[in-house]
Length: 243
Image (tube, rainbow, N blue to C red; front, side):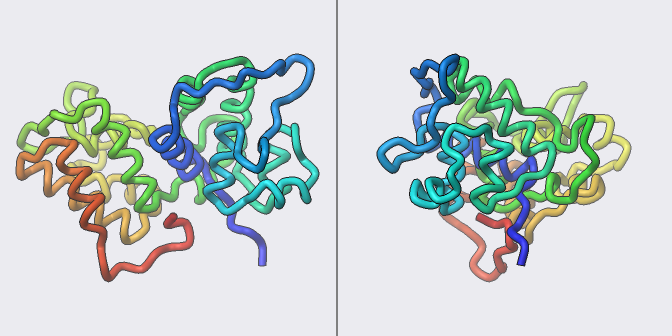
C-alpha cells in the first residue's frame, strides 16, 4: 500500500502547530554556505521540517537509515515515507531555504505561505483537505493574535474585503477571497469550503460549525478556541488525515 500523500493545507497547519508548541523565534546558527544544516542532532529534530516529520512518527534512526541527512525537503520527505504534493514540496523547500539563511521559524513559515494549489502546479485533492487539528491550529493562530475580539452580528465571513469573523480569518488563510463567499452566497465556512472543492473531515466540519455557533453567542475568540480544545466530538470517526 502506498503511503498517504501530504498536501499543502496539512503541511502548513502542521508547521503552524510547531510554531505554537516550540519557540517560533528559533533560528539556525549554522554555516549553511559550506554545508546544509542537519535534520536531527543527538536524536532531536533540528529544523522545522524535521519537527514536522517527528510529529509524523519519523525518528532520527529512521532518518539515518534513509541516508538523506543534509538533503533538501523535496528529497527527504519521500525518502522517509512521507510523500508531498507539488505545492507542499514548494512550501517545505521554501521554509528550509529561509531557515538556512537565518530566518526565524515564524518568519520563514509566514513568508512562504501561499494559496494551496498555487500557479505552476496541477490541482491535487490532498492540497485541499482539512482535518480537525489543522482547523483548530488555524483558529488558535488567529485567536492568539486577537484573543479579545468578539464577532459582530449578523455573522459574516468578510466585510469590505476583509475577514469579519474568526472563521473568516481562517478561510482567508486558506486562500479564499471575499468574492468567492459572495458568489456562493453563504456565511457558513464549512459550506463555502465544500463548495470550493475542499474536503473537511467530519470532525473538522463539526469544529467549524461549533465555532460559528459560538461566535453568534458572543464569546471572545480566545474563549471559543478554549472551548473547542476541551470539548472534542466524542462520536465522530477520524479520517486518515485527522492528526
